[in-house]
Amino acid sequence: MKVRVLGSGAGGGFPQWNCNCSNCSRLRNGRINAVARTQSSIAVSTDANNWVLFNASPDIRTQIENFPAIQPKTGIRDTGIRAVILIDSQIDHTTGLLMLRESNKPLNIYCTEMVRQDLTTGFPVLKMLGDYCGVDQHGIPLDGQGFEIPGIDDLRFYSHALKSKAPPYSPHRHDPHEGDNIGVTIEQISSGRKLYYSPGLGAIEPHVRQAMQDADCILVDGTFWREDEMERAGISKKKASEMGHLPQSGDNGMISVLNRFPDTRKILIHINNTNPILDEDSDERRILESAGIEVARDGMEINL
Ligand code: MLT
Ligand code: MN
Ligand code: ZN
Image (cartoon, rainbow, N blue to C red; front, side, top):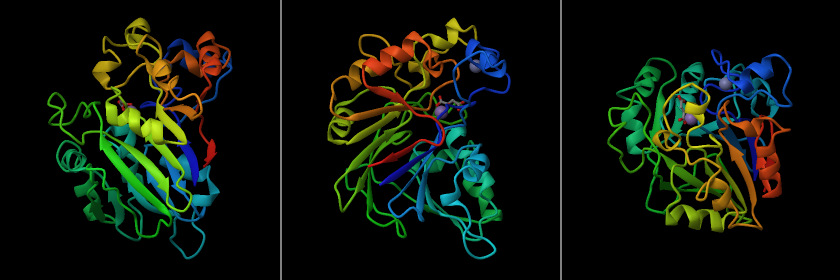
């Protein structure tokens, strides 16, 4: 299985257009050992021609232009994107669907019922696309059954509900439902190799721990280092947990969770621009390195 990190940043990307935090300003001034990041998305394939996209970020045009394997190859209109799986309905994961409106076929979109509701009410992109390329929307089972996608050979997808958050615009932002956010295990059927992907993870429930345990590679929420990171940066009073993200530091933080899987490859993704781990010379980055945890960057490829 080939996994391409299209975008490794959280909503807003790095640097964020209006952000003057230490990371964003130092990146603009060339005073930080760090690279820019587009917003959260990965592409997965087994044959390097037919790709399933996880999430469609507002930066999708740049991401496609930086990745020849997914670009048009034959005919006047073509793409390597066979389907899009949405893990939630957040703006950074769904706005890119609008940029795919020129598709000459209906977009093949897989999402939960809750995400479908958000994307037909609060942000009705699935309805809007009806007047462009159209949408073939498919549900995602949350009962452990798993599903396959026609045209994507040798992969099976297993999803489960997560405790995270519906987006601020969602009619049920403060009324959590099963399927607002999901984690997905992607299994290559022939090899049995598994990636666990969960870029928005607020709490480690037993089924999450089990999925991590069973995976050969864990690609998870790296949004914040601290619970009060936004407040410390003087940006907002919102806590990481209120936004549905488990911070890396702290007694029950993501590092201590990942430490339980010493033999598994572990990579953080969906990094917010305020997170000190973006600075490759930071103490926080050293802590991750000594825990054997990698930080995703745009263009990173994972071969499983
Ligand atoms: C989040 O995951 O919390 C988002 O990145 C926030 C956003 O897109 O505004
Ligand atoms: Mn996000
Ligand atoms: Zn910033």
